Amino acid sequence: MTLIRSLARPMLSSMFVAGGIDEIRNAAALAPAARPVTQRVAPLIESRIPTAVPLPSDTAGWVRADGALKVAAGLALATGHFPRVASLLLIGSLVPTTLTGHPFWKETDQQAKVQQRQQFFKNVSMAGGLLIAAVDVEPSARERVEIAARRVKRKVQRDS
Image (cartoon, rainbow, N blue to C red; front, side, top):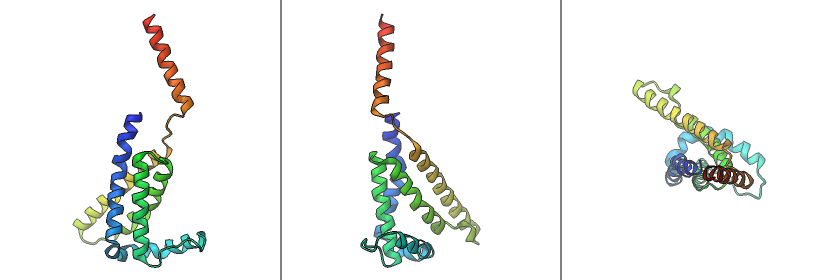
């Protein structure tokens, strides 16, 4: 299972790291689509964060902050550092990104609607993978010792 985690976590996080880098680099171009969400979400965040913490002052700044969060949480997930927290942060970032970036229900062009719907449900699928990662619990040190002891016991019984 450890091998699977060490392969699956970077695979799952790759989209967030790459997407986060793109958001940081292209924040100004992405800002118009993000504005409806940042206008709703920014005041909620600002009301819960101490005033001493510097927060973005415009939509492009919020897009860059979201990109930085995706890169940091994606790298944390990929490397197995705080994977459950990283997964939850990525889900929190993915929801507004999905709603603003892929509103297929607003599309009138059928081809554009199909493409947006595919991207929307790809993100829903990614959120499902992140939920699995968020509840995935690696064996504790005690559990690893118990597993190893059972293996040794079985080996000894086979060899005797």
